[in-house]
Length: 295
Image 1 (cartoon, one colour):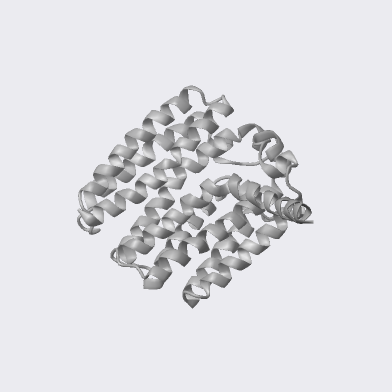
Image 2 (spheres, rainbow, N blue to C red):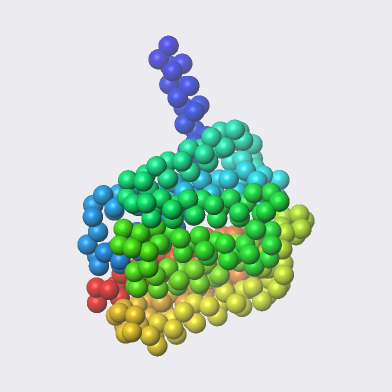
C-alpha cells in the first residue's frame, strides 16, 4: 500500500517538476529583476517578508505565463524545441493547464499579502501573458509586438519588486527601463533560434521581419548604447561609476557571444546554445545596479 501511494505521489509530482524545470531559467531572470528592484527601492533595507514573498510572486506568475505559452505552441515547439515536456508528450496538457491556473491564482493570492498595488501589478503581468499567447489575440505573432510585450512584462516584474515603496521609485524605475532595453538583445536572439518553426507557421518575429544578420547587429549595438547612457548620466541617476563600468564589461561579453552567433546564424542549435549564455547578461545587469549603489 505504501509503495502504491509513493508511486501515485511520484506520478503527480513528476509532471510538475518537469514543467517547472523547463522554464525555471526564464523564471529566475524575471524574479531577479523583482529582487533587485526591491533592494534598490528600499535602499538595501527591505523587510524580510518582502524578500521572501515578492520573488515568489514573480516566479509563480512568470512560470504560469511561459507554461501557458508552451500549451499554445505545442505544434511549433515540436520543430523548435522538441525536448520540452509538452512538445515531447512527456506531460499531459491537462496537467500543464492545472499548473498554469494554480500558479497564476497563487501569485495573486500571495500578492494580496503585500499590498493592493502589488495585486494590481501581478494581475497586469498575468494579463500581459494572456495577450501574448492566447489565440486570435496572440501578440507574439505580430512582429515587434512580441518583444515589446516581453519588455513590458519585464518592466512590470520590476515594478512588483518596488511596489512596497510606491509605483515609481527613481532608481528602481531606471533599472526596470534598462532591463526592458536589454530584452531587445536577448529575446530576438531566442527568436533567431526558433526561426524555422516560426517561419513555417507564419509568425512575424524580428528575425523574420528584418533578417537574421540585422537581428544580430542590433543585439550587438544595444548593450554598448546602454553603457554609453550610464557613462553620461550615472551621477544624475545616483549610481556609482561601477555601474557603467560593469555594463561596459557586460557589453564586451555580449559581443563575444554575438560574434559567434553572427558567424553561425543559420545553425539554430548553435544559436540556441549561445543564447543560454546571453541570459547571464540580465544577471550581470542586476549586479551592476547593486555595486553602483554600494560603491
